[in-house]
Amino acid sequence: MITLKGDNIYIRALEPNDLDFIYALENEQSMWEVSNTNTPYSRFLVKQYLENAHQDIYEAKQLRLAICQDQDFPALGLIDLFDFDPKNNRAGVGIVIQNNDMRKQNIGSEALELLIQYAFQNLNLHQLYANIGTENEASKALFTKFGFKCIGVKKDWNLVKGRYKDEAFYQLINQQF
Image 1 (cartoon, one colour):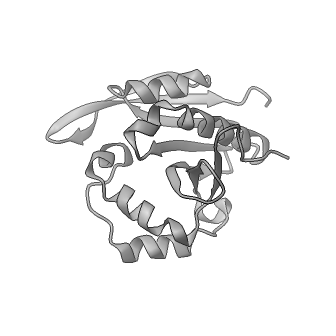
Image 2 (tube, rainbow, N blue to C red):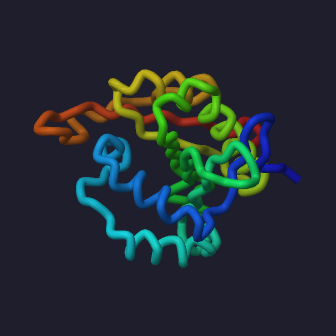
């Protein structure tokens, strides 16, 4: 059985106490580019989302987990499996660390490693994928560190502040299948 605890962090299910964190993160405009969001979320909607966060990944088709450094909260970031497709054994992966200073402390790397292990060993997924803006060097380095390969670039895929940007498609195949 895999644990979702690493050497310095752990990833856990969302809790009602995460309301303020998620509300702030979802409404931080600098994050909207990577989350494909362009409107603010109300506290009410985030609260409703948390009330339904108990849904199984097979029901919700996604799994959002909080990244933490200790058992006493608070969340430092979020890591997601999205577009879960059990028929084809694949899911997308997204990760965000809220505080810029925390991004260079190996937190995202450890969280991604835990999620990959969970996805392949517990969910028996055959592949994971990530959509990464071609200008996002930190994310490209993070995902390639774990064997994700860039298999294509979607030209002029996202409109960001009046300018179209390319998005790369990264894929990791579980070699145990």
